[in-house]
Structure formats: C-alpha cells, structure tokens
Image 1 (cartoon, one colour):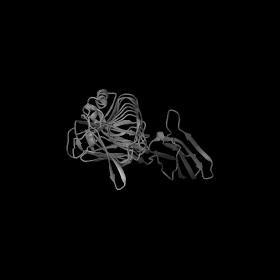
Image 2 (cartoon, one colour):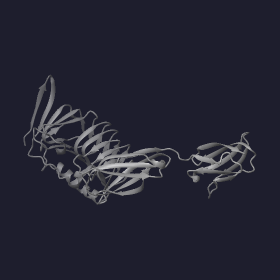
Image 3 (tube, helix red, strand yellow):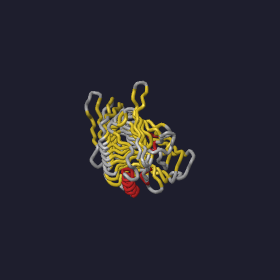
Length: 413
C-alpha cells in the first residue's frame, strides 16, 4: 500500500491535496437499491412539509408517517421490491466496509473539507466526522475514478459544505460508508451515494444529489430535495395543471413525454393534504416516446380549497406521485326566491337544499313572521305559502349549514 500526502501553497493559502491510492477500490453492487434515492431497510419513513424526490423511495419494513413526498419514481414500502432492496443495501454496506475489497488508503481527521482535494481511492475516518467547507474530488481525467470515504461514527454535514467534482470525476462513482447516523443541517447540500448504519435526518431545505440508503434507522425529511439522476422513471410528466371548468368544476390536465410499462393514472383528491381519496382512474398509453395529453374534470369539487395529485401506476403495480396541485372553488350556495313580487306562493331555488339550515321571514318593522329549521331527517321545503302575509316589504334570511347567510328582499302584493 502506498500513501502520498503533500501540501500545495497557493498565494499564501494552503490547500490540502491527498492521494488515497491503495491496493484497489471496488464500487459496491447495489442491485435493486440502485433505483432508490431514499431507503431504509428497517425504520420509519417520515416527512414534514413538501419534499421532492427523483428516484424510488421506500423501506423493507416500518411505518410511513407525515406528508406524502412528491416522487418522480416508484414507492416501495414493505413490498417485495422493498424487501429485496433491504438485502441489497446490507450487501452493499458490507462490500464498502470490507478491508479486503476496500482497504483504507489514507486516514482523514474531522472535520473533512476546508479546501481539501481528494484523488481517487479509499479514505477512512476513525471517529465521528463533520463535513464542512469546500471538498474537491479530482478524478485526474479518469471518468471511471472511484472515491470511497469510510466514516467510523456519526456523520454531520454543515450548510457550508460544497463538494466539487473535477477532473472527469462523476457523481455515480462517489460512495460514503458511515457506521452511524447521518444528519444534514438546514440548507446543506450533499453529493454521492450514502450507505449508513443508523438514522438519516435532513433538516429544512437540505438537498442530496445521489442516494441515501440505511441498513437500519429512521429517515426524517423536512421540505427537502433528493435526486437520483441514474433512476429510470416509468413516466416522464411534462406538465400537470388545474383550472376552473364549467359549472364550478375543476379541470385537470397533464402531459407525458415518455411512458414505459405504464398502466394507469389514479386521480386523488383531498381538502387537507392528510387524507386522500381516489375519485377517478384513467388508462395510460403504456409505451410512448412522444407527447401525450390527458384531462379529467371533477364535476363536484368542494367549496374552498381542493387538492389534487396523480398516482402514476406501472403494470407491476409500483407507483409514483405527481406534485400536488390546488384550486379554490367559489361557493355555489346562492339562493334565489321567485316570483318576486309575489301574491300567494314563493319558491326557493338553491344549488343544494341539503346545505340550507334555516329560513326566516321578517317584516320591514323587524317582526318575525315565519321561521323554519331543517329537520333531523328531512330538508327544508322549497315552496312556501305566504297568502296570509300582509302586503309589504319582507326580509328573507337564509342560513346555510356552514354558518354563512344570504339575505333577500321580498315584496308581498
């Protein structure tokens, strides 16, 4: 084994250039785990806020809590693919940690960064480690150059970390093996394939370019962005929009540019982002390399904010979610009274009589002359006999079940 360590002086500052040359370094075989951006073999998958992921997500076993992430990829929680990925992550971790296939070439001390430059090889830190400042990975003009950094303890990533790939170094050839938990500070950016033993925690706004895979531990997310650009996606969603259609409907429109083994789209609706209901299913094209447009009209959205998302399902029943779109639907509860003026009878027309709680007729002097409430098992009538009302001006107060009120003027002849 050969180690080289030397300093380069540049304009009065010191840049550490380290060669990790060793007997050899071997990239792990990821198997099914290669398609994942976030995965834990055993542990909870929890998300707060709006997290966006490119690549598969899942676990071998464990709860799924919090808000659903927006996933351009497939979701595998405790299914056959998740269980297989758990075995593959464990195997990859063993390959990286092996002193036979990946013996240490250079020992690093915490913190790692601070304008340091690493060349291809295997690096080891024997304690809990912090990544901070600029860290340059120089492939030395070799696009197949492999970087393996082993951390024997917890890994903390500061917001200031900036991993720079140069000299033909490629993201897919950067591996981090961590014997402990991993945490990213708010706004921190991390690059490479991380495989660790323990929890993975991303503070608000932290991002990962690559993968974060745990053999056992909770994954905690908070409005993050994680992208595994090597993942092959079954559906490439070009756009997904929503607008108001005819008669208070919500019109959903979306388009794809690539579909591979795609089976169908399920349209899901929610009013609080916690509980989602499938409201429709549309068959997809299945196989396509051209622009295909789809649309669906929800003719009965609720008043107020309506949330929609697409569940894009493959032929093998794996699926991914689109981003969430929302639209505000104005109230359609306005009531109409006719004829007006009236001699003996009056009809009330409403979009939905079940939403009418009470109707009150008052004279111009403020005297209540008729008061009817919705009965337990029946709605208010739509027709009223007002022959006995003295001629004059009346105020009709219509109260809805949501507490809102419409007030009308009525002239009795």
